[in-house]
Structures are given as C-alpha cells and as structure tokens.
Figure 1 (cartoon, rainbow, N blue to C red):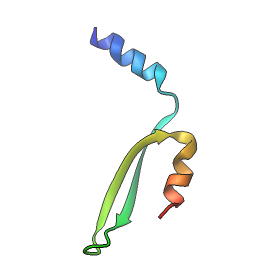
Figure 2: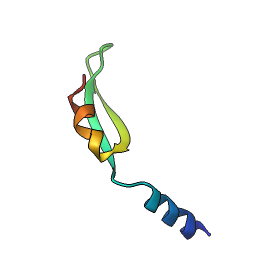
Figure 3: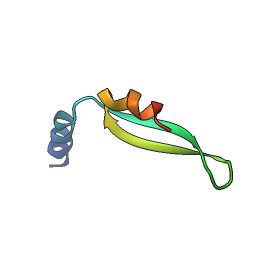
Figure 4: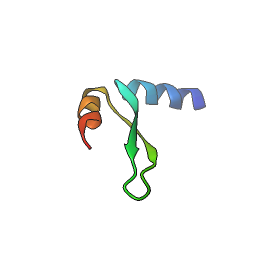
Length: 50
C-alpha cells in the first residue's frame, strides 16, 4: 500500500526542485541556509530575491 502512495505522489508532482539558498542573518551576521521545494519554473525568481 505504501508503494501506491509514493507512486501517486511522484506522478502528481511535476518538475519539483529542492532549492537551497545561503542568506546572511541580520542579527549576528552568520550565514543560514533556506531550503524550499518549489516548481522548477520559479527557481530563478527565488534565487534573485533578497
């Protein structure tokens, strides 16, 4: 039954990409990593925003 659920999720999600962006923290100046799973078409817009 678990295999059917996984197969359904894989066919429903088309061109999904995990994006990891390094962002400087305003509090202490250290870098943190921001992770998101998003549509492949909107990756460039996400990486360009500050």
